[in-house]
Image (cartoon, rainbow, N blue to C red; front, top):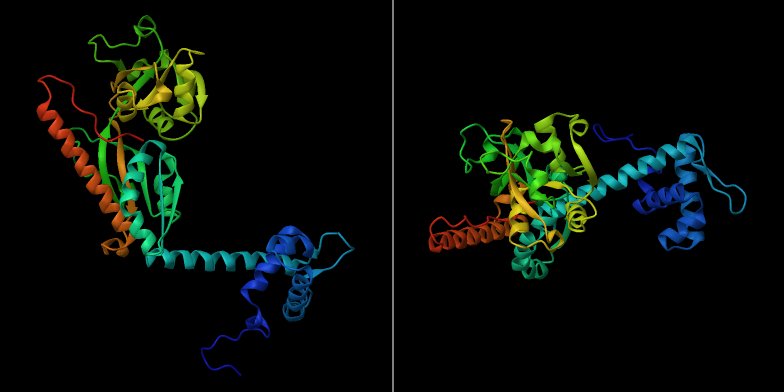
Length: 375
């Protein structure tokens, strides 16, 4: 009889190993012992021996075998009990892997970071400064490409530990651009935000000036948001820009727009417009517009940019920066997340200092220097 408070596990359960669970799952997914053997790099006889052991120990307890053999080359027949235990094996293995990954990240043994395409250079420069230390300390670094619309989701799911990119925010009327956005937006509860810049939007276009007359503001300051439905637009199918258009024109914005082309990346849109296959305009963030104007995006060669003026009163802005979860390990200055975070902060501080120095030395009335790149 088990001691009071001690779980009473079925006979044979504690004899089942993780490797046997993996074998059961492999056979379930591959359909045959031979397929599982090839997948796991094992002998078929070893796979069959483990199946016989689980059939005997767990099948006897449950009242039916987990699986039944069929003819040579045919798929193994899993009973209902076998299917349930195979799914349970999947959850058990996934749960342990997730737990081990979490422990490794918490103890600084691994670091998973991501960025949008246009903040990758920013991230890489910071990684270069700490990568030697990561290598010496055995930190496993993994990098991933993320879209602007999934930044917080990747952090929330613990898929990534730090991300660099852009997110759409609302600027309160009269609020200063330097106001800490994390204090204004409930979405950032539980996250730390390192703001690099906050800006608006502009149009990248290959259209002749005459085609944009109707869409231009009379004061010469660019194109008003209200004019966008009259212009042929190249529009992303997902990401940050569709969210911006929904904010301006509602969820059915596509019915109101003249969509000349749908794209899945800004790079594709730039090449399309640069080719002159079609004439139109593409909504981009202010940072990307500055990069186009300064010739830093070869794929957008030959395009020009026009300021986009928010004349609908929504005050939508793009916040560009770095994001991480607010966790106890972030208070450890030697943790990999903290090391990379601080390097990003130092890099941003150097860029801002260079920009301020450049602005002081610039001729009066010269345009302000560009800030950090947009998403």
